[in-house]
Length: 103
Image (cartoon, rainbow, N blue to C red; front, side, top):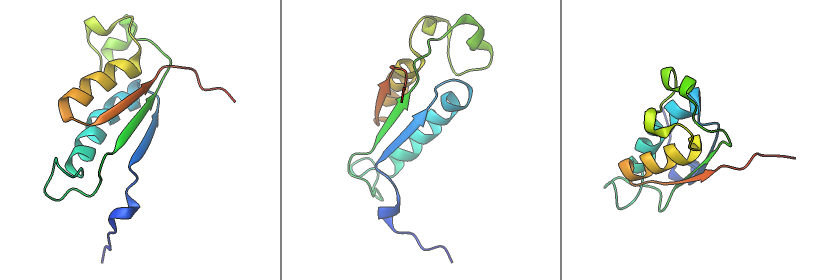
């Protein structure tokens, strides 16, 4: 039988990449985090979860066919676009990091 302990769910989640895979993951992850946040859900386990979305790339016209963006997003940072969109949609704190990760 599955044994669940709320302490096993991290309150900080890091997603690296906001393109094809990350762009599809963020809406689902945001919805999930909302569903387990105290104050948002009667069964909430986490106090103030955060999603850190890391990507230094900008949206290009070619991204619109296969990634989770629309025309007005072109030229903007992918992480910033998705963080703003899904923070508002689900009331979850999504922090965009638009700097390149280096060693």
